[in-house]
Length: 85
Image 1 (tube, rainbow, N blue to C red):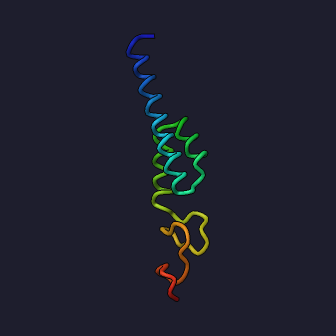
Image 2 (tube, rainbow, N blue to C red):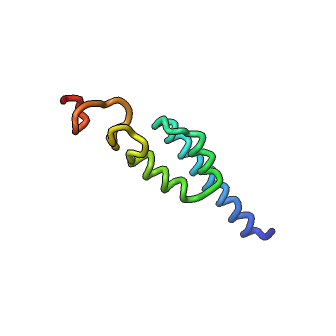
């Protein structure tokens, strides 16, 4: 292998490890299956990062009862989520 090939592989490894580490830590903070996001971030770039942004950070209402997207944790109640009916 040439020097530039080694540098390219090292850069790819750094990018994948960094992405995986960030996805794992952020998913753990948001209680959203951190091992899944961390492992997926380790094998692919940038699709896991893009989908994580839309699914977890933007909190799309996939599979949530009542369609209350945007709420993280607790919070029940009326149409604006304030708890006042």
